[in-house]
View 1: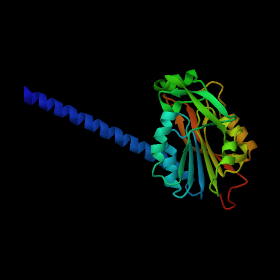
View 2 (view 1 turned 30 degrees about the vertical axis):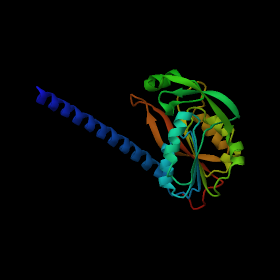
View 3 (view 1 turned 180 degrees about the horizontal axis):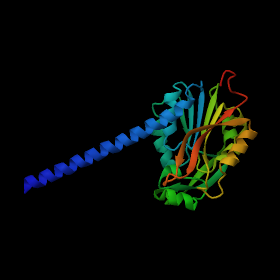
Amino acid sequence: MRELLRSMLHAVGLDIRLTRKLHAAAIAARKDQEYQAWTLLQHRPIASVLDIGANEGQFAAIARRLWPHAQIHSFEPLPAVHDRLLRTLHGLGDAHAHKLALSDRAGRTAMHASAFSPSSSLLPMAELHRREWPESAQHSSVEVTLARLDDWATAHRIAVGPQLIKIDVQGHEKAVIDGGRQTIRCAEVVVLEVSFYEFYERQPLFADIFDTMRELGFVYRGNIEQFRSRDGRRVLYADAVFENLERVSTDEP
């Protein structure tokens, strides 16, 4: 009986270790897929990166691989997530974390902190989001600090040279742009998460972002990645690339 029990426990242990290895392999494969998607921009001589909506630093790690000498500034307002961001940035060289939610105004406000932290937003979650990602529906309210990108940029020293700005703030992208128009106009490339459907209440959709970026002198150049609905029938959102026509090299195609 003891031998049987020992064998059963050994088999369970093997199953658990195998499951963990498969899970780790899936995560590694997804990270490599994300990195490969971003190599579209690797040829650009980026000197500084503003990672707005950094979460745990997933993009910061990619940016360091793409641009080994770039200065990185990552913005994440939620305290618990910001702590994980700090751990990611440790060892990435000239990389800095800022516990701020960038917006079109400064101050303090309540943020909807989702059970799935990348879904956290300053905007209330819409029904479509809850249907597509039910695991992210539960949330709590966390008070965070707001700042305008232009105010922050004026107060901080940013590396001189071509700049890339990534904005992924769950429906709050237009407010970030409105609070940082002067800074954004100086960037070479801006990558924005854009939605084709409303996942957060009153969020701007792709057409609104497209028009705003065109006003600032940018042209839409396609997507780094795009993401489908659960049934595979709709493209829900994408990481859209906008290029500054005044700053692009004349030898670019």
